Every structure is written in structure tokens, then in C-alpha cells.
Length: 291
Image 1 (cartoon, rainbow, N blue to C red):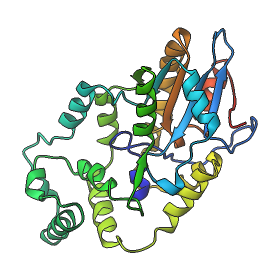
Image 2 (tube, rainbow, N blue to C red):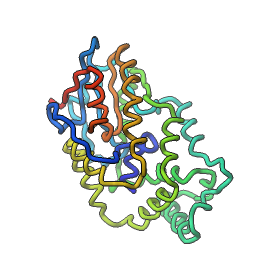
Image 3 (cartoon, rainbow, N blue to C red):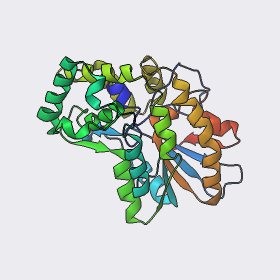
Image 4 (cartoon, rainbow, N blue to C red):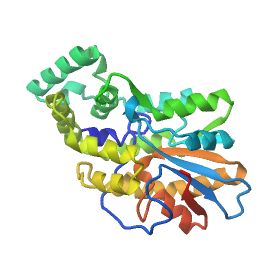
């Protein structure tokens, strides 16, 4: 389920794709930070690949990342989570209006297992969650999904830095768009992933550790390849390709006005239909900003 967790943006950050695609090498693949210039931009913008929750010891944040963020006028995440109205819309979107209760999606045995886990591990009373969609449980459990006691959120850290210098916070998508994409995940897939996670709580997740290693070494091509091995979520074009294509004109509009530090799920970067390649096709110069 931790690979599903990597999809979650704010609540469910996306870093998956359906297939491994080749992409021409432009500088090093080992970079989470990329500089966007050219095509009449007066100042460069940057794009940084995130993970929502990661152990503090695995957190990657270099001096160059810090100075690039400081040099930009605005910050743009996948959603503007700094806006209370956006958070309210996300919360509303995760409420189940079908009349079904949360317990109706599980077998009695599964429900008891989930109930005990939420109570013992997270201190939550499952009776308070009956109006939520099953996908909402993933965001709740994700806070307990890292193998450490002190996880860090890139979005939170970037927002804190942006607030110190009064940078405007923006989003690439509306909450309704993200909720619509999440709802394409089959409910059975979500249920099975939740139960699997609970049953394997104390077992090492080697796949997840490989992903973390690729992220720490900033090897976005390997990260992309590893995650592509997962077929859990069905039509992955909805999670990456379609969203990436929508983002490019939105990014262009924002960069024309001012320099922007974009922070999106790391899996959006690589691939023929990745944001880096699509920006190049749109006429921009995109280079690694690690050095």
C-alpha cells in the first residue's frame, strides 16, 4: 500500500505511471530540482520532485534547493493547500454521499481488524469515520505509514519557508480534479491495500525501501522505473499523463507573470509524457539545477 501512498498529493500524492518509457538524457538523471528557462521568460523558474511523507533521515534538501526556492517570487504545489477553502473542498470530496457506511465496504473480519488497528496504532475511533469514503482511510493511515517516529512533509516544509518571505502560494489543480482522479481507483483495490498494510505492519517493505533509496539519490529515472512495476491502480494515464498535459499550459501562464518554484510528486518528472519532457517540447530549456 505504500506505493499507493506515494500517489497522494496533499492527501494522496501521485508518483506512479503505467509503463517505463525512454527519455533522452538532458544532463544528469540524478536530480530532483530542475531549472526552467528560455521562451521569453524574464527569470527562470524551478520544478522540484517531492514525496509527501518521508523519514527525516531520508529527507533531501540541499543548499541549491534552498537558494532556488528563495530566488522565486511564488510557490506552486499540485493544490493550494494553504487555502482553507481548498482543504474544505478536499474534505467534502472525501465524504461518502451514497448512503453506504464505511463498515459496509469490509467483511466483518476485515472491519474488526481495521477497527483495532485504528484504535491501537492511531488512537482513532472508527465510528467517527463512518461517513468517509474508503480512500480517506489511506490519507489517515499514511501519517503512520513511514518506518520512523518523525516523518517530514515536503509540502509543509516548503510552505513554512514560503511564509517567512511572504511568497504567494498557488496550485496547479482544483480539489475537484484530484478527487475525480482518486475516484478512478477501484474500491476493491483500496480495501485490499488497506488490509494488506495492516497485516504487514511489522514486516519490512523492500519495494518501498528501494523507492526511498532512488529518491535519496535523486535518481528519478530509476524511481520512475521501480514504481512502474506496480499495476495496482488501473489506468495510470489518468494519474500522470493526462494531468501532466493539463499542467503545462497552466505552468506557462504562471511563469510568464513571475518566477515560480513548482513542487509536484517526483513521478511526474520523468518519461516521454513527464513534465520535464513536455516543457522541452513546449520550447523551454530544462536542465538539472543540482549543481
